[in-house]
Amino acid sequence: MPLQPHLGHGIGLRPPHYPLILDGTARADWFEVISENFMIAGGRPLRVLERARALAPIVLHGVSMNLGGTDPLNERHLDALDTLIRRFDPAWVSEHLCWGAFGRHYAHDLLPLPFTEDALRQVVDRVRHVQDRLGRRILVENVSSYVTFSHSAMPEWSFLGAVAETADCGILLDVNNVYVSAVNHGFSPYDYLAGLPLDRIGQIHLAGHTDAGTHLIDTHDHPVPPAVWEIYCAAVRRFGPVSTLVEWDDRIPSFEELVAEADRARALEAEVLDAYARPA
Amino acid sequence: MPTPDLRELQGLFWRSISADPAGVAPALLEVLEPSATLGAAERLRVYADAYFGRLHDVLAEDFPRVAALLGGERFEDVVREYLTSHPSTHFSVHHLGRDLAAAIAQRTDLPPYLADLARLEWARREVFDARDCEFLTADALQAVSPADWPRLRFAPIPALAILRADWPVHEVWGGTETASVPAATCIRVWRSQDFRVYHAPMDARDAEALDRLIAGEPFGIICTAFDDLAPLEGAQRATALLARWLDDGIIAGVD
Image: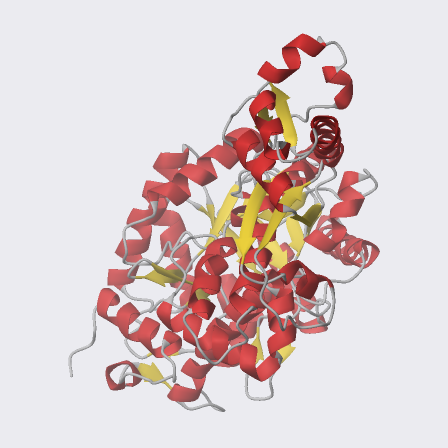
Protein backbone atom coordinates (compact mmCIF):
# COMPACT_ATOMS: atom_id res chain seq x y z
CA MET A 1 0.00 0.00 0.00
CA PRO A 2 1.75 3.22 -1.08
CA LEU A 3 2.10 6.04 1.44
CA GLN A 4 0.72 8.60 -1.01
CA PRO A 5 -1.03 8.27 -4.37
CA HIS A 6 1.34 8.15 -7.36
CA LEU A 7 0.58 11.46 -9.04
CA GLY A 8 3.23 10.98 -11.71
CA HIS A 9 6.03 13.42 -12.49
CA GLY A 10 5.34 16.99 -11.49
CA ILE A 11 6.87 20.42 -11.68
CA GLY A 12 7.72 22.98 -9.03
CA LEU A 13 5.60 26.00 -9.93
CA ARG A 14 7.50 29.30 -9.86
CA PRO A 15 6.52 32.89 -10.86
CA PRO A 16 8.08 32.91 -14.37
CA HIS A 17 5.56 30.26 -15.38
CA TYR A 18 2.50 31.87 -13.80
CA PRO A 19 1.29 33.25 -17.17
CA LEU A 20 1.04 29.69 -18.50
CA ILE A 21 -1.13 28.77 -15.54
CA LEU A 22 -3.36 31.80 -15.96
CA ASP A 23 -3.90 31.13 -19.67
CA GLY A 24 -4.43 27.43 -18.97
CA THR A 25 -1.67 26.14 -21.25
CA ALA A 26 0.63 24.71 -18.57
CA ARG A 27 0.45 20.94 -18.57
CA ALA A 28 1.94 18.81 -15.82
CA ASP A 29 0.96 15.72 -13.85
CA TRP A 30 0.94 17.86 -10.73
CA PHE A 31 2.39 21.06 -9.29
CA GLU A 32 4.28 21.71 -6.10
CA VAL A 33 4.34 25.21 -4.61
CA ILE A 34 6.16 26.78 -1.69
CA SER A 35 3.49 27.06 1.01
CA GLU A 36 4.72 30.32 2.56
CA ASN A 37 4.56 32.15 -0.78
CA PHE A 38 0.79 31.75 -0.68
CA MET A 39 0.22 32.72 2.95
CA ILE A 40 -0.97 36.12 1.80
CA ALA A 41 -4.26 37.98 1.85
CA GLY A 42 -4.89 38.04 -1.90
CA GLY A 43 -3.54 39.02 -5.29
CA ARG A 44 -2.11 37.28 -8.30
CA PRO A 45 -0.27 34.37 -6.60
CA LEU A 46 -3.49 33.07 -5.03
CA ARG A 47 -5.32 33.44 -8.34
CA VAL A 48 -2.52 31.44 -9.97
CA LEU A 49 -2.83 28.73 -7.33
CA GLU A 50 -6.59 28.53 -7.90
CA ARG A 51 -6.01 28.05 -11.61
CA ALA A 52 -3.20 25.55 -11.06
CA ARG A 53 -5.44 23.54 -8.76
CA ALA A 54 -8.06 23.45 -11.50
CA LEU A 55 -5.47 22.12 -13.97
CA ALA A 56 -3.82 19.43 -11.82
CA PRO A 57 -3.30 18.20 -8.26
CA ILE A 58 -1.12 20.44 -6.10
CA VAL A 59 1.21 19.76 -3.21
CA LEU A 60 2.19 22.30 -0.54
CA HIS A 61 5.89 22.35 0.30
CA GLY A 62 6.88 24.39 3.35
CA VAL A 63 10.26 25.95 4.01
CA SER A 64 10.11 27.57 7.45
CA MET A 65 8.07 25.50 9.90
CA ASN A 66 11.29 25.04 11.90
CA LEU A 67 10.55 21.37 12.62
CA GLY A 68 14.01 20.87 14.09
CA GLY A 69 14.02 24.12 16.03
CA THR A 70 13.92 24.69 19.76
CA ASP A 71 11.68 27.78 19.72
CA PRO A 72 8.02 26.83 20.23
CA LEU A 73 6.31 25.94 16.96
CA ASN A 74 4.70 29.03 15.49
CA GLU A 75 0.97 28.46 15.83
CA ARG A 76 0.20 31.39 13.52
CA HIS A 77 2.24 29.64 10.86
CA LEU A 78 0.30 26.43 11.43
CA ASP A 79 -2.97 28.35 11.25
CA ALA A 80 -1.92 29.88 7.94
CA LEU A 81 -0.96 26.47 6.58
CA ASP A 82 -4.24 25.00 7.74
CA THR A 83 -6.13 27.80 5.98
CA LEU A 84 -4.22 27.10 2.79
CA ILE A 85 -4.92 23.38 3.05
CA ARG A 86 -8.64 23.94 3.53
CA ARG A 87 -8.81 26.27 0.56
CA PHE A 88 -6.72 24.32 -1.94
CA ASP A 89 -7.06 20.68 -0.85
CA PRO A 90 -3.47 19.62 -1.62
CA ALA A 91 -2.68 15.98 -2.29
CA TRP A 92 -0.23 16.23 0.60
CA VAL A 93 1.91 18.65 2.59
CA SER A 94 5.65 18.51 3.15
CA GLU A 95 8.30 20.28 5.23
CA HIS A 96 12.05 20.08 5.76
CA LEU A 97 13.99 18.07 8.33
CA CYS A 98 15.98 21.02 9.63
CA TRP A 99 15.70 24.12 11.75
CA GLY A 100 15.50 27.69 10.50
CA ALA A 101 14.62 30.02 13.36
CA PHE A 102 16.05 30.89 16.76
CA GLY A 103 14.87 33.40 19.33
CA ARG A 104 11.87 34.15 17.08
CA HIS A 105 14.21 35.24 14.31
CA TYR A 106 14.03 33.44 10.98
CA ALA A 107 17.05 32.56 8.86
CA HIS A 108 14.91 31.57 5.86
CA ASP A 109 17.41 28.80 5.33
CA LEU A 110 17.50 25.06 5.94
CA LEU A 111 19.93 24.70 8.84
CA PRO A 112 21.45 21.37 9.85
CA LEU A 113 20.63 19.21 12.85
CA PRO A 114 23.01 16.99 14.78
CA PHE A 115 21.79 13.42 14.48
CA THR A 116 21.38 12.76 18.19
CA GLU A 117 18.72 11.13 20.34
CA ASP A 118 17.99 14.57 21.82
CA ALA A 119 17.32 16.07 18.37
CA LEU A 120 15.33 12.99 17.33
CA ARG A 121 12.96 13.34 20.29
CA GLN A 122 12.58 17.04 19.60
CA VAL A 123 11.75 16.57 15.91
CA VAL A 124 9.40 13.66 16.51
CA ASP A 125 7.40 15.64 19.08
CA ARG A 126 7.11 18.57 16.70
CA VAL A 127 6.15 16.49 13.67
CA ARG A 128 3.45 14.85 15.77
CA HIS A 129 2.20 18.26 16.88
CA VAL A 130 2.05 19.50 13.29
CA GLN A 131 0.25 16.36 12.14
CA ASP A 132 -2.24 16.57 14.99
CA ARG A 133 -2.89 20.25 14.27
CA LEU A 134 -3.36 19.68 10.54
CA GLY A 135 -5.20 16.37 10.93
CA ARG A 136 -3.03 14.70 8.33
CA ARG A 137 0.27 12.94 7.85
CA ILE A 138 3.03 15.13 6.46
CA LEU A 139 6.21 14.30 4.55
CA VAL A 140 9.59 15.47 5.83
CA GLU A 141 12.43 16.14 3.43
CA ASN A 142 16.14 15.53 3.88
CA VAL A 143 18.16 18.72 3.29
CA SER A 144 21.61 19.30 1.83
CA SER A 145 24.16 20.05 4.51
CA TYR A 146 27.62 21.54 4.69
CA VAL A 147 28.74 20.82 8.25
CA THR A 148 29.20 17.64 10.26
CA PHE A 149 28.56 17.61 13.99
CA SER A 150 31.05 15.50 15.91
CA HIS A 151 28.45 14.45 18.47
CA SER A 152 26.02 12.97 15.91
CA ALA A 153 25.24 9.48 17.09
CA MET A 154 23.83 8.00 13.88
CA PRO A 155 24.01 8.53 10.12
CA GLU A 156 21.55 10.90 8.55
CA TRP A 157 19.51 8.16 6.93
CA SER A 158 18.99 6.42 10.28
CA PHE A 159 17.85 9.71 11.80
CA LEU A 160 15.44 10.41 8.92
CA GLY A 161 14.07 6.87 9.03
CA ALA A 162 13.64 7.03 12.81
CA VAL A 163 11.76 10.35 12.54
CA ALA A 164 9.41 8.84 9.96
CA GLU A 165 8.81 5.61 11.86
CA THR A 166 8.43 7.18 15.30
CA ALA A 167 6.34 10.21 14.30
CA ASP A 168 4.43 8.18 11.70
CA CYS A 169 5.14 10.63 8.92
CA GLY A 170 6.28 10.12 5.37
CA ILE A 171 9.58 10.97 3.71
CA LEU A 172 10.12 13.36 0.84
CA LEU A 173 13.36 11.94 -0.49
CA ASP A 174 15.42 14.61 -2.24
CA VAL A 175 17.95 12.60 -4.22
CA ASN A 176 19.88 15.74 -5.16
CA ASN A 177 20.26 16.55 -1.47
CA VAL A 178 21.40 12.99 -0.84
CA TYR A 179 24.07 13.41 -3.50
CA VAL A 180 25.16 16.89 -2.34
CA SER A 181 25.49 15.75 1.27
CA ALA A 182 27.16 12.49 0.22
CA VAL A 183 29.89 14.43 -1.57
CA ASN A 184 30.21 17.04 1.18
CA HIS A 185 30.44 14.46 3.96
CA GLY A 186 32.00 11.54 2.15
CA PHE A 187 29.31 8.89 2.50
CA SER A 188 27.76 6.65 -0.15
CA PRO A 189 24.39 7.82 -1.50
CA TYR A 190 23.51 4.17 -2.00
CA ASP A 191 24.08 3.43 1.69
CA TYR A 192 21.66 6.32 2.32
CA LEU A 193 18.95 4.71 0.16
CA ALA A 194 19.57 1.27 1.66
CA GLY A 195 19.18 2.69 5.15
CA LEU A 196 15.72 4.17 4.63
CA PRO A 197 12.52 2.30 5.44
CA LEU A 198 10.85 0.88 2.33
CA ASP A 199 7.33 1.99 3.11
CA ARG A 200 7.81 5.64 4.07
CA ILE A 201 8.81 7.33 0.81
CA GLY A 202 5.91 9.49 -0.35
CA GLN A 203 7.65 11.76 -2.84
CA ILE A 204 10.99 12.26 -4.57
CA HIS A 205 12.65 15.57 -5.44
CA LEU A 206 15.07 15.98 -8.32
CA ALA A 207 17.19 19.09 -8.84
CA GLY A 208 20.55 20.41 -9.90
CA HIS A 209 23.34 21.86 -7.79
CA THR A 210 26.53 23.92 -8.07
CA ASP A 211 30.04 22.58 -7.72
CA ALA A 212 31.95 25.16 -5.65
CA GLY A 213 35.19 23.21 -6.05
CA THR A 214 35.59 22.37 -2.38
CA HIS A 215 31.97 21.35 -1.87
CA LEU A 216 28.62 21.08 -3.63
CA ILE A 217 25.86 23.64 -3.00
CA ASP A 218 22.17 22.87 -3.34
CA THR A 219 21.28 25.75 -5.65
CA HIS A 220 18.43 24.32 -7.75
CA ASP A 221 19.72 26.31 -10.72
CA HIS A 222 21.02 23.60 -13.03
CA PRO A 223 19.57 20.63 -14.89
CA VAL A 224 19.49 17.37 -12.97
CA PRO A 225 23.05 16.02 -13.40
CA PRO A 226 23.90 12.40 -14.40
CA ALA A 227 24.94 11.39 -10.87
CA VAL A 228 21.55 12.45 -9.49
CA TRP A 229 19.70 10.61 -12.27
CA GLU A 230 21.66 7.48 -11.30
CA ILE A 231 20.60 7.79 -7.68
CA TYR A 232 17.03 8.38 -8.83
CA CYS A 233 17.08 5.09 -10.76
CA ALA A 234 18.46 3.35 -7.67
CA ALA A 235 15.68 4.91 -5.59
CA VAL A 236 13.02 3.67 -8.02
CA ARG A 237 14.58 0.19 -7.90
CA ARG A 238 14.42 0.23 -4.09
CA PHE A 239 11.17 2.06 -3.41
CA GLY A 240 9.13 1.41 -6.57
CA PRO A 241 7.08 4.08 -8.31
CA VAL A 242 6.94 7.29 -6.27
CA SER A 243 5.54 10.69 -7.22
CA THR A 244 8.52 12.68 -8.44
CA LEU A 245 9.09 16.39 -8.88
CA VAL A 246 11.73 18.49 -10.63
CA GLU A 247 12.72 21.60 -8.63
CA TRP A 248 14.25 24.80 -10.03
CA ASP A 249 14.51 27.93 -7.90
CA ASP A 250 17.05 30.08 -9.70
CA ARG A 251 17.95 30.69 -13.36
CA ILE A 252 14.59 29.08 -14.02
CA PRO A 253 14.34 27.68 -17.56
CA SER A 254 11.35 27.59 -19.88
CA PHE A 255 8.35 25.56 -18.85
CA GLU A 256 9.09 23.23 -21.78
CA GLU A 257 12.51 22.46 -20.34
CA LEU A 258 10.98 21.61 -16.97
CA VAL A 259 8.46 19.37 -18.69
CA ALA A 260 11.31 17.67 -20.55
CA GLU A 261 13.05 16.90 -17.25
CA ALA A 262 9.83 15.56 -15.75
CA ASP A 263 9.37 13.44 -18.89
CA ARG A 264 12.88 12.11 -18.50
CA ALA A 265 12.12 11.11 -14.92
CA ARG A 266 8.96 9.38 -16.14
CA ALA A 267 10.88 7.47 -18.81
CA LEU A 268 13.61 6.41 -16.40
CA GLU A 269 11.08 5.25 -13.83
CA ALA A 270 9.30 3.19 -16.50
CA GLU A 271 12.61 1.74 -17.71
CA VAL A 272 13.61 0.67 -14.21
CA LEU A 273 10.19 -0.77 -13.39
CA ASP A 274 10.01 -2.53 -16.76
CA ALA A 275 13.35 -4.20 -16.14
CA TYR A 276 11.99 -5.48 -12.83
CA ALA A 277 8.75 -6.72 -14.36
CA ARG A 278 10.50 -8.58 -17.19
CA PRO A 279 10.72 -12.34 -16.58
CA ALA A 280 14.25 -13.49 -15.80
CA MET B 1 34.06 21.73 27.32
CA PRO B 2 30.71 19.84 27.54
CA THR B 3 28.80 19.23 24.32
CA PRO B 4 26.11 21.89 23.95
CA ASP B 5 22.52 20.70 24.02
CA LEU B 6 20.32 21.33 20.99
CA ARG B 7 19.11 24.73 22.20
CA GLU B 8 22.62 25.92 23.01
CA LEU B 9 23.93 24.57 19.73
CA GLN B 10 21.30 26.42 17.70
CA GLY B 11 21.98 29.65 19.58
CA LEU B 12 25.70 29.38 18.82
CA PHE B 13 24.98 28.50 15.19
CA TRP B 14 22.48 31.34 14.76
CA ARG B 15 24.87 33.94 16.13
CA SER B 16 27.71 32.60 14.01
CA ILE B 17 25.84 32.88 10.71
CA SER B 18 23.88 36.09 11.38
CA ALA B 19 26.51 38.25 13.09
CA ASP B 20 28.11 41.10 11.17
CA PRO B 21 31.03 40.83 10.93
CA ALA B 22 30.69 37.05 10.90
CA GLY B 23 32.33 35.39 13.85
CA VAL B 24 32.38 31.77 14.87
CA ALA B 25 31.71 30.86 18.48
CA PRO B 26 34.63 28.71 19.77
CA ALA B 27 32.16 26.37 21.50
CA LEU B 28 30.56 25.68 18.13
CA LEU B 29 33.88 24.95 16.44
CA GLU B 30 34.46 22.31 19.11
CA VAL B 31 31.61 20.20 17.70
CA LEU B 32 32.13 20.85 13.98
CA GLU B 33 34.31 18.51 11.96
CA PRO B 34 36.36 19.52 8.93
CA SER B 35 35.72 17.85 5.59
CA ALA B 36 38.40 16.57 3.25
CA THR B 37 38.47 19.97 1.55
CA LEU B 38 37.24 22.56 4.07
CA GLY B 39 38.00 23.46 7.66
CA ALA B 40 35.15 23.58 10.18
CA ALA B 41 34.95 27.39 10.12
CA GLU B 42 34.93 27.42 6.32
CA ARG B 43 32.08 24.93 6.28
CA LEU B 44 30.10 27.12 8.65
CA ARG B 45 30.85 30.08 6.41
CA VAL B 46 28.75 28.43 3.68
CA TYR B 47 25.71 29.04 5.89
CA ALA B 48 26.72 32.60 6.81
CA ASP B 49 27.17 33.47 3.13
CA ALA B 50 23.84 31.85 2.23
CA TYR B 51 22.04 33.71 5.04
CA PHE B 52 23.21 37.09 3.84
CA GLY B 53 22.97 36.25 0.14
CA ARG B 54 19.41 34.98 0.27
CA LEU B 55 18.05 37.87 2.33
CA HIS B 56 20.01 40.42 0.29
CA ASP B 57 18.35 39.05 -2.85
CA VAL B 58 14.89 39.26 -1.27
CA LEU B 59 15.42 42.92 -0.38
CA ALA B 60 16.91 43.70 -3.79
CA GLU B 61 13.79 42.23 -5.39
CA ASP B 62 11.41 44.17 -3.14
CA PHE B 63 13.38 47.45 -3.40
CA PRO B 64 14.76 47.41 -6.95
CA ARG B 65 15.08 51.19 -7.33
CA VAL B 66 16.72 51.64 -3.95
CA ALA B 67 19.16 48.86 -4.81
CA ALA B 68 19.88 50.31 -8.25
CA LEU B 69 20.41 53.85 -6.97
CA LEU B 70 22.77 52.75 -4.22
CA GLY B 71 24.73 50.31 -6.35
CA GLY B 72 26.02 46.90 -5.31
CA GLU B 73 28.47 47.65 -2.54
CA ARG B 74 26.47 50.40 -0.85
CA PHE B 75 23.23 48.43 -0.98
CA GLU B 76 25.06 45.45 0.55
CA ASP B 77 26.20 47.71 3.37
CA VAL B 78 22.61 48.89 3.97
CA VAL B 79 21.37 45.29 3.92
CA ARG B 80 24.02 44.10 6.38
CA GLU B 81 23.18 46.84 8.86
CA TYR B 82 19.46 46.24 8.39
CA LEU B 83 19.68 42.49 8.95
CA THR B 84 21.65 43.10 12.14
CA SER B 85 19.12 45.58 13.54
CA HIS B 86 16.01 43.96 12.01
CA PRO B 87 16.41 40.19 11.61
CA SER B 88 13.38 38.51 10.07
CA THR B 89 10.60 37.92 12.60
CA HIS B 90 8.03 36.37 10.29
CA PHE B 91 7.82 32.84 8.89
CA SER B 92 7.29 34.34 5.45
CA VAL B 93 10.25 36.16 3.98
CA HIS B 94 7.78 38.51 2.25
CA HIS B 95 7.72 40.63 5.42
CA LEU B 96 11.48 41.09 5.64
CA GLY B 97 11.56 44.61 4.21
CA ARG B 98 8.82 46.07 6.39
CA ASP B 99 11.19 48.34 8.36
CA LEU B 100 13.81 49.05 5.71
CA ALA B 101 12.51 52.55 4.94
CA ALA B 102 12.61 53.48 8.64
CA ALA B 103 16.12 52.05 8.94
CA ILE B 104 17.27 54.04 5.92
CA ALA B 105 15.75 57.19 7.42
CA GLN B 106 17.99 56.74 10.47
CA ARG B 107 21.14 56.94 8.38
CA THR B 108 22.71 60.27 7.55
CA ASP B 109 25.09 58.94 4.90
CA LEU B 110 22.41 58.11 2.33
CA PRO B 111 20.55 60.36 -0.14
CA PRO B 112 17.78 62.19 1.77
CA TYR B 113 15.02 61.02 -0.59
CA LEU B 114 15.97 57.35 -0.27
CA ALA B 115 13.72 56.57 2.70
CA ASP B 116 10.69 57.95 0.85
CA LEU B 117 11.63 55.90 -2.21
CA ALA B 118 11.85 52.80 -0.02
CA ARG B 119 8.41 53.62 1.43
CA LEU B 120 7.01 53.81 -2.10
CA GLU B 121 8.54 50.48 -3.05
CA TRP B 122 7.24 48.87 0.13
CA ALA B 123 3.74 50.28 -0.49
CA ARG B 124 3.85 48.70 -3.95
CA ARG B 125 4.92 45.41 -2.35
CA GLU B 126 2.10 45.54 0.18
CA VAL B 127 -0.72 46.25 -2.26
CA PHE B 128 0.52 43.41 -4.46
CA ASP B 129 -0.52 40.88 -1.80
CA ALA B 130 -3.51 42.75 -0.38
CA ARG B 131 -6.94 41.18 -0.03
CA ASP B 132 -9.04 40.65 -3.15
CA CYS B 133 -12.46 42.25 -3.58
CA GLU B 134 -15.15 43.09 -6.06
CA PHE B 135 -14.76 46.28 -8.09
CA LEU B 136 -17.41 48.95 -8.52
CA THR B 137 -18.01 49.96 -12.13
CA ALA B 138 -19.40 53.17 -13.54
CA ASP B 139 -22.28 51.16 -14.99
CA ALA B 140 -23.38 50.17 -11.51
CA LEU B 141 -23.91 53.85 -10.67
CA GLN B 142 -26.10 54.59 -13.69
CA ALA B 143 -29.29 53.76 -11.81
CA VAL B 144 -28.54 56.13 -8.91
CA SER B 145 -30.80 59.16 -8.95
CA PRO B 146 -28.97 62.54 -8.94
CA ALA B 147 -30.68 63.44 -5.69
CA ASP B 148 -29.05 60.46 -3.96
CA TRP B 149 -25.49 61.15 -5.08
CA PRO B 150 -24.46 63.40 -2.18
CA ARG B 151 -25.31 60.60 0.27
CA LEU B 152 -23.33 57.85 -1.50
CA ARG B 153 -20.48 56.39 0.53
CA PHE B 154 -17.78 54.54 -1.40
CA ALA B 155 -15.56 51.78 -0.08
CA PRO B 156 -11.95 51.72 -1.32
CA ILE B 157 -10.35 48.47 -2.43
CA PRO B 158 -8.04 46.86 0.16
CA ALA B 159 -5.16 47.07 -2.34
CA LEU B 160 -4.92 50.86 -2.07
CA ALA B 161 -2.33 52.85 -0.14
CA ILE B 162 -1.69 56.57 0.25
CA LEU B 163 1.90 57.67 0.61
CA ARG B 164 2.82 61.14 1.86
CA ALA B 165 6.43 61.89 1.12
CA ASP B 166 8.80 64.81 1.49
CA TRP B 167 10.35 64.12 -1.91
CA PRO B 168 8.83 63.56 -5.39
CA VAL B 169 9.95 59.95 -5.35
CA HIS B 170 7.49 58.85 -8.03
CA GLU B 171 9.81 60.70 -10.41
CA VAL B 172 12.84 58.90 -9.04
CA TRP B 173 11.05 55.55 -9.26
CA GLY B 174 10.15 56.04 -12.88
CA GLY B 175 13.44 57.28 -14.22
CA THR B 176 17.14 57.33 -13.74
CA GLU B 177 17.26 60.80 -12.22
CA THR B 178 17.78 61.39 -8.55
CA ALA B 179 15.71 63.90 -6.62
CA SER B 180 17.54 67.09 -5.78
CA VAL B 181 14.75 69.29 -4.44
CA PRO B 182 12.34 68.23 -1.71
CA ALA B 183 8.64 68.72 -2.41
CA ALA B 184 5.68 67.54 -0.36
CA THR B 185 4.20 64.75 -2.45
CA CYS B 186 1.12 62.59 -2.09
CA ILE B 187 1.02 59.36 -4.06
CA ARG B 188 -1.71 56.78 -4.36
CA VAL B 189 -0.59 53.20 -4.88
CA TRP B 190 -3.01 50.52 -5.99
CA ARG B 191 -3.39 47.11 -7.56
CA SER B 192 -5.63 46.97 -10.58
CA GLN B 193 -8.08 44.25 -11.53
CA ASP B 194 -5.42 42.58 -13.69
CA PHE B 195 -3.11 42.40 -10.62
CA ARG B 196 -0.68 45.03 -11.89
CA VAL B 197 0.54 47.58 -9.33
CA TYR B 198 0.42 51.28 -10.19
CA HIS B 199 1.13 54.55 -8.46
CA ALA B 200 0.29 58.14 -9.33
CA PRO B 201 0.89 61.51 -7.68
CA MET B 202 -2.12 63.49 -6.49
CA ASP B 203 -2.56 67.24 -6.11
CA ALA B 204 -3.80 68.56 -2.77
CA ARG B 205 -7.48 68.55 -3.74
CA ASP B 206 -7.42 64.99 -5.13
CA ALA B 207 -5.56 63.78 -2.05
CA GLU B 208 -8.06 65.44 0.29
CA ALA B 209 -10.96 63.93 -1.66
CA LEU B 210 -9.44 60.46 -1.49
CA ASP B 211 -8.76 60.85 2.24
CA ARG B 212 -12.46 61.63 2.72
CA LEU B 213 -13.53 58.65 0.63
CA ILE B 214 -11.30 56.35 2.67
CA ALA B 215 -12.68 57.86 5.88
CA GLY B 216 -16.17 56.87 4.74
CA GLU B 217 -17.46 60.38 4.12
CA PRO B 218 -20.40 60.71 1.69
CA PHE B 219 -19.81 61.97 -1.83
CA GLY B 220 -21.24 65.37 -0.91
CA ILE B 221 -18.45 65.84 1.63
CA ILE B 222 -15.82 64.40 -0.73
CA CYS B 223 -16.79 67.15 -3.20
CA THR B 224 -16.01 69.88 -0.64
CA ALA B 225 -12.34 69.20 -1.39
CA PHE B 226 -13.04 71.36 -4.46
CA ASP B 227 -14.90 74.14 -2.63
CA ASP B 228 -12.20 76.67 -3.44
CA LEU B 229 -13.09 76.36 -7.13
CA ALA B 230 -16.07 77.86 -8.90
CA PRO B 231 -19.14 75.63 -8.23
CA LEU B 232 -19.42 74.29 -11.77
CA GLU B 233 -15.70 73.62 -12.10
CA GLY B 234 -15.62 72.02 -8.64
CA ALA B 235 -18.49 69.68 -9.54
CA GLN B 236 -16.85 68.77 -12.84
CA ARG B 237 -13.50 68.07 -11.16
CA ALA B 238 -15.12 65.90 -8.47
CA THR B 239 -17.10 63.93 -11.03
CA ALA B 240 -14.06 63.46 -13.27
CA LEU B 241 -12.02 62.30 -10.29
CA LEU B 242 -14.64 59.72 -9.34
CA ALA B 243 -14.69 58.51 -12.95
CA ARG B 244 -10.90 58.11 -12.88
CA TRP B 245 -11.02 56.20 -9.59
CA LEU B 246 -13.65 53.89 -11.05
CA ASP B 247 -11.62 53.46 -14.22
CA ASP B 248 -8.47 52.69 -12.22
CA GLY B 249 -10.41 50.18 -10.13
CA ILE B 250 -9.77 51.62 -6.67
CA ILE B 251 -13.40 51.55 -5.50
CA ALA B 252 -14.82 48.29 -4.23
CA GLY B 253 -18.41 49.24 -3.55
CA VAL B 254 -20.98 51.85 -2.72
CA ASP B 255 -23.51 52.21 0.05
